[in-house]
Amino acid sequence: MRPFGVTLLSILIAISGILLLGFSFALSVAFVTIPPYAIKPAFVHLPMIYIAVFFMILGAINLILAYGLWFGMRWTWFLTLIFSLIGLISSALTFNVISAIIYFIVVYYLFRPYVKEYFGVR
Image (cartoon, rainbow, N blue to C red; front, side):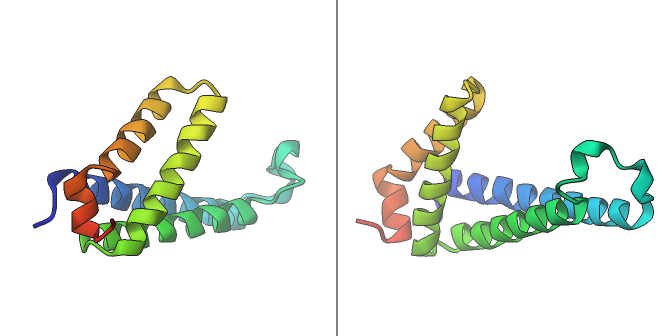
């Protein structure tokens, strides 16, 4: 039986993936429809299409991760742990307290015995 926290985490990551894919689609449409002279100078060095592709890749990774979490695939436990630790470190370095707390809770939750058992991690 899947723990409730894993279900919740999987749903939140899936929603995040869908939003990232939607954002990348919106950026792609904007890239095609906005004339080049209307783009602010900050985007000259990094075209919007690269940003859109980056968010598309992140969205796809999130959806794959959500699928794996939902079905208890072992590799998703490790991948979620890695992403959460990276998020925790970056949140701490930027003094983003709320994000740091959320990532800490996720890391703590992943090490609960029944969660590790669900994913088959020792």
